[in-house]
Amino acid sequence: MAEELNQNMTDLWVRTLARIREEMSESEYSAWFSRLRFADGKNGKVVLYVPSAFFRDGFESKYRTRVEKAMSSVSGSPWTVSLEIKRDAEKQIQQATVIEKPQERPPVNQKSVREKKSNVEYMLNPAYTFNSFVPGENSNFAYSAAMAIAKNPGSVYNPCLIYGGVGLGKTHLLQSIGNYLQQNSDLKIMYVTTENFTNDFIQSINLKTQNQFQKKYRKVAVLLMDDIQFLQKKEGIQNELFNTFNDLYDTGRQIVFTSDRPVEELRDISDRLRSRFARGLSIDIQPPDFETRIAILRTKCNEKGFTISNDVLDYIAQNISSNVRALESCITKLMAYSQLLNKDISLETAKEQLKQIISSNNDTSSVSLDQIIKSVAAYYNISPYDIKGKSRGQSIIIPRQVAMYLCRTMTDYSTNEIASEFGGKNHTTVIYNVQKVQSMMKSESSDMANTITRLSNQIKQESRKN
Ligand code: ADP
Ligand code: MG
Image (cartoon, rainbow, N blue to C red):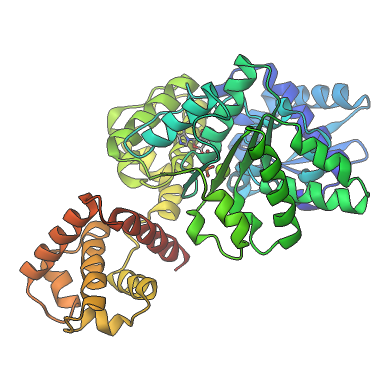
């Protein structure tokens, strides 16, 4: 299994993939190499998992020898490749394509490969640029802020925190800043995941190289730090980050963080570090609306040189709403299929092929009224019975309105159905309350819009677990 592979092997495989990737188009690479998984490698023999017999035969005739050659030339000793069918191989796409997505939290065995090389070239994914990012209502602000930072680091928004749910483009934007600066400036840039930073720190303690560690992070002009939610509960590292932060900040260097939640919701973070994070600009990325999803899908198809009919695009955009990575996976999957069979994708085929991706991402259809009421009650620290009940106390009314609003917008239930869930109220009450929340969301003196975002993300997450 990939997790148990030793570091040299992983390193070799990663470099082999990089070599192969240079030799072919992006679409060819993603059709074949993002669908297989490294299973095992030792004594000059490599085993790769492939998703089907059909894929195996295609790969066998087209690529096996090429992989053997590339691997042998990268390592300087001969390698043979054998293929094994493993139906879930594709689920592991993210792991197999470390090169494609170096921003991902790497599987345990790959950490050290990356730590060894802390040069920014290795860490940044060149595909993550402002050009390849499709902004929409949901991400305009984050997009422009990231751009402003890239053009003028250390002066405009410092520090900056970009937060939002999984797969919404935080890493993409963060790395776009890095890529832009790499192209357009001589500034020293550091992109690091919180996990890398942590491991680096721990290693420096073990090896007694703390000085070097500090120098490494404090000499940069721009620090891009991904996924600070993983800092939770780690005090030593928080101290170190606090000091690094102060040092950079006081000397006008730029710091950009990402996180999957707003600063206030980071748990177990020391107050002083929290106050540092909160000091600058904090911007969220929301899930894209339908039009933006279509625009993203089109862009991804164009990039890969893949044409797909409008009804299939619509189908995908309608069924996947809160994760751009999942949109992308749909395209990759259909494209591989279309290339393998050498034919266009009909809506029927698309439905069949995408069943799994869609059902594991279908966030709204799985949201229940019960779940909404439960989450809202927990958020306001009252009981679900109060929300459904008749009390007109101020501390209950707002939560009840919020719950009704979320029931209306996150599910397909009618106002009548919702009314009966709320202790048999009249459906006009539901309509009134929904409007009430809508107007609060527009009001500048209210934090309602943020509350709704937070709650709906939380509800989606909870629903996915069930
Ligand atoms: P996050 O870090 O928020 O979990 P990523 O930045 O890794 O998400 O994005 C997931 C995938 O979706 C990446 O391949 C990224 O290129 C793509 N992506 C996300 N948002 C957009 C966007 N607005 N336009 C184009 N691609 C996007
Ligand atoms: Mg990310």
